[in-house]
Image (cartoon, rainbow, N blue to C red; front, side, top):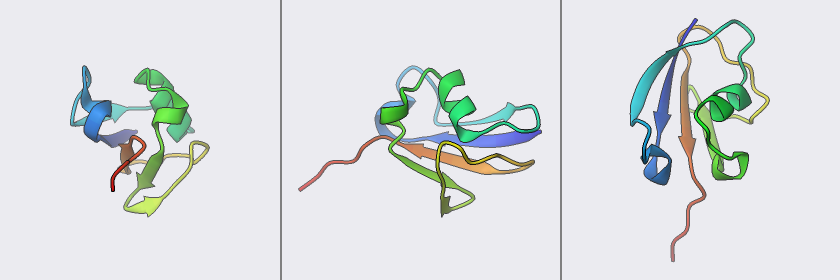
Amino acid sequence: MKVTVKLFATLRRGRFDVNTLDCPDGTRVQDIVRQLAIEEKDAAIIFLNSRHAGLSTTLGEGDTLAIFPPVGGG
């Protein structure tokens, strides 16, 4: 199945901004995070098809996954 993955801010370093990945059925967000060598603590905000998701969420054909690092500000 094809899944579009969008990375933001510091997670883009040495990776990509947007990429379409070919994944086996049953792939979870956590599997993508590991595949991209992102530490789980650095995948602080996760959206799947514009809705909040967790690391254990299972992906489906045509999904769009957005991963953000911890955000600071003031």
